[in-house]
Image (tube, rainbow, N blue to C red; front, side, top):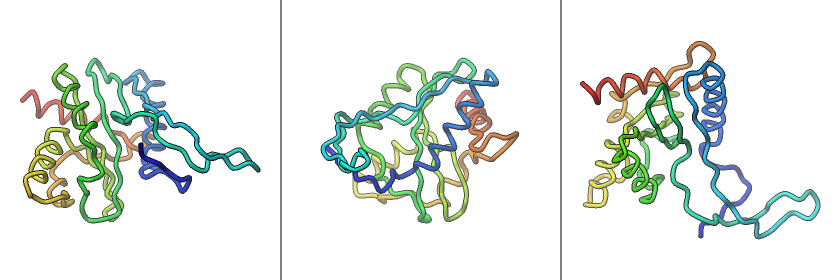
Length: 178
């Protein structure tokens, strides 16, 4: 089981922005998307304030978010990188397996990746990440350069939505169907 210490979770600011966006999507009837919590078991507590100092993950997580947007079932994972590339080691095989099964059921799986160096957030289809992960297993590159992703779907702040990914998702769906 993996352990974490309370120094903060990677991607937590991106996830917080997505959570705020998802609340607004629900309020405006655009979609119903929920954050999927990862169950943890506390191992060590701070006796003074009761905070968790050390814990382990009880089970593997699947994806960060799952829901439905205007009739389309979606699941996605949020990732951040401060580099000019996205390391594929940040995605685990069980996540890819879940996304693969989700797409077999006619859902749409994708990643929202924030490249902080470029201050750009992109919607990257699962199928692209899957292909790159397979290439990496066969000795290919272990990361994806930003320049190789920038032709995907940019997510921009719009109409008070901090991570307004529905427009990018709409374009992705149009490209899949076209």
